[in-house]
Image 1 (cartoon, helix red, strand yellow):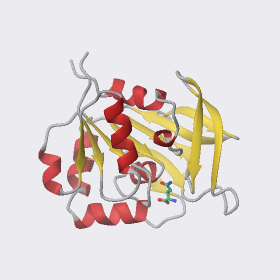
Image 2 (cartoon, protein in one colour):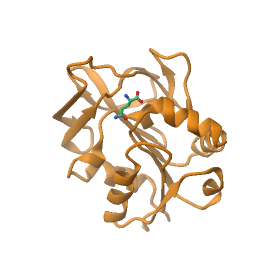
Image 3 (cartoon, helix red, strand yellow):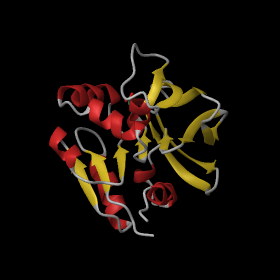
Length: 192
Ligand code: GLN
């Protein structure tokens, strides 16, 4: 199996960390900064953490939202971390509208309250084991469609899910030394 080529959405947020991690794991990596970048060939896309409202608006302004949605709907593997998970969600419980809406879950933004805005813990991820988890003004998943696989919960809250070609985490695997979440995603992007 050959490692796929990974595109990282690079309009705002922690895209540099994602690109660095993916490259270090031996996958070719490109940045998506404008609509034309979506014309390139790639086998998976990462939507990084950051500010989902800013990223979503930029995707609309740059004309990238529709083509990206189309690719994901047709099966392009995608990993959304934190703000990226919010972009993927079909519904945002405490927001007027969603963005890509390809992942049948409802998320809640900034869901851990002011004091608990950012925290570090460890949690069990289905199929992987215990991994470090860094949360930064993170969302959690309030509800999922039945077909969505729940990969991890922290204190009863869903923090990682998988649905077909889509992987979403409320935490930031690119900010911890553990590679297993990225390896799981790279396996979803393998060619051949
Ligand atoms: N609070 C941000 C949002 O609502 C997400 C934070 C993050 O990506 N670390 O988009």
